Length: 370
Ligand SMILES: Nc1nc2c(ncn2[C@@H]2O[C@H](COP(=O)(O)OP(=O)(O)OP(=O)(O)O)[C@@H](O)[C@H]2O)c(=O)[nH]1
Ligand SMILES: [Mg+2]
Ligand SMILES: [Zn+2]
Image 1 (cartoon, protein in one colour):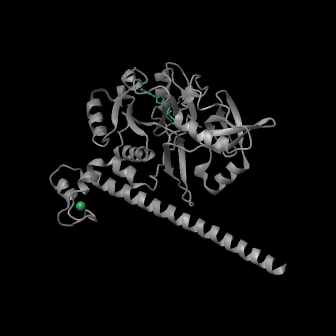
Image 2 (cartoon, rainbow, N blue to C red):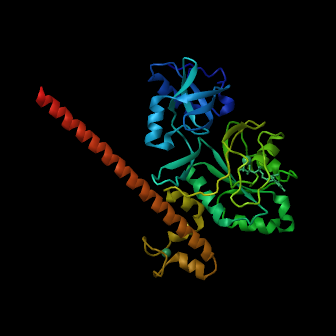
Image 3 (tube, rainbow, N blue to C red):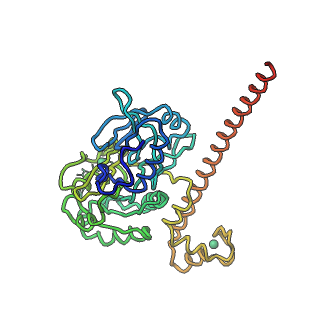
């Protein structure tokens, strides 16, 4: 049973300010019409193991239904996550998340745990704002990793070089370095302190679109959100001297900017492993991947094969050999993570198959016993 009819277009849906759209509406209607209970759509602001904070649009705490809990135990990446659209119902005094609606783009990193499940950082995102501070490098290897993740999400990556005022005269140099590894992604130099570049970047935050901020702790993500919003939506913090760093933002938040865009501010990430999707890596390294397509052999390893276009570009000084090495490393990592994922799937399937076998044997045994 759907409370909001999809045929009535005259009224603005109460969740429109939270990014509600036709795709989500269809997904919700499909779930709601198959449910025995009356369901409401809601968007997850933040989540933890046993429950989530959802917007209905008013904020409410919601527990997970047994089905959602069971699915999350089998595969943690299916658990409700910031940005998710869910179907909820009232059960006594509490809200229950009955289903997680199908996601569009989601930002996923490879889980570092042994079970190799992916970890969803943000769901249903349209764009990823990668924040890299101008005063600390910038670190091109890290940018390439973030970009690989962002491209794999299906959302549009945009790069913000934060704390730009701190680079002083070096800013053009910093930007040149950043732009040497950000193929296909727009780059903005911004400063939350001086306001530099904020107007240009803000123009990208279209109403109803969902952005997620990705960067290390202390990169200035929350400061940037506050500066764009013109008021303090998020706490910000000093950078600690110890390298491990404490996070100022400790849980994910879904915020609405004055212009109508939604922003997921998430805690800074230190370790970020690319998930098993080489496509993301190849999009981030479109220049190298494009060269690789011109190699004489389709399975060229770009070692010492004749007719290797990648090595030719290195020899001619057109491709930085370090970038080539980083591409190889990320591809190997993605390949490895995919194979781990495949192995896990195989193990799970074998378990399911064995359980089914056992069940069949028991059934047969019972029948014979009768
Ligand atoms: N000079 C300068 N400092 C900035 C700027 N933006 C942020 N900072 C400082 O950088 C530090 C970290 O900023 P936050 O916004 O808390 O960083 P964050 O990325 O949200 O960090 P986590 O929440 O831990 O992930 C704070 O001390 C800010 O004052 C800027 O544009 N210029
Ligand atoms: Mg923060
Ligand atoms: Zn080659």
